[in-house]
Amino acid sequence: MSENPLQPPWLNAPPVEEYPYQESHDLRVGPKLHPSLDGLLPYVGVWRGRGRGGFPTIEDFDYAQEIRISHDGRPFLFYESRAWLLDDQSRPVRPAGREVGWWRPVLDGERVTDELEALMTVPTGIMELHIGKRTGTQIEFATDAVVRTATAKEVTAGARLFGIVEGALLYAQEMAGMGHSLSPHLSARLIRVAG
Figure 1 (cartoon, rainbow, N blue to C red):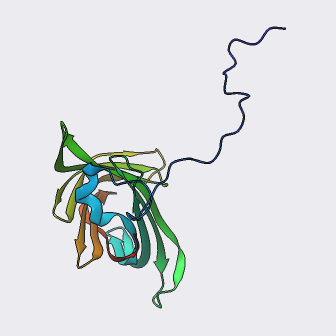
Figure 2 (cartoon, one colour):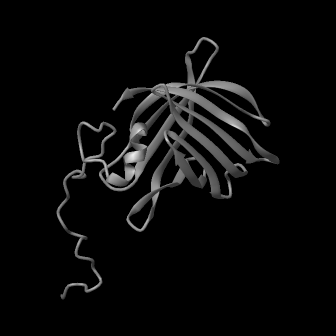
């Protein structure tokens, strides 16, 4: 019996080791930060803090959050956020929003501009493509496109403002959807805990 020519060569290949490339939120270890990310260097790290959320269709709520911004030496940052609701005694109630994404500076040939592109995705079926601009340690993003699954809530636009203020990461997020124009949705102040 001859070998099946349609059988891919990797089908019976031996297992591989763990992922061999390091990612870091700490600039003292791991790969060197890509030069195009120098303007975003203050954001690299692990941040934790508290915030307040709301929207015209829901009651206001308090939350805690951890944001990890890391790199692997290539010209983009990896963004990961985990949040949890807090009760009026600041005790955890339940997990809340999760989000992952990538921030990438826009290049003009070899020259780094102050423009950024960001792709942000949540597990509830919404993906936002943001276009932004960095001014010093402030970043302002606005959605260029929102894609959502058939079962996701209706989100049509968003805007985000990030800033490093007195060593803390502050942000405010607006959202449009469910029949409402851009409205305040989330805001928080987070302290660097690693990086």
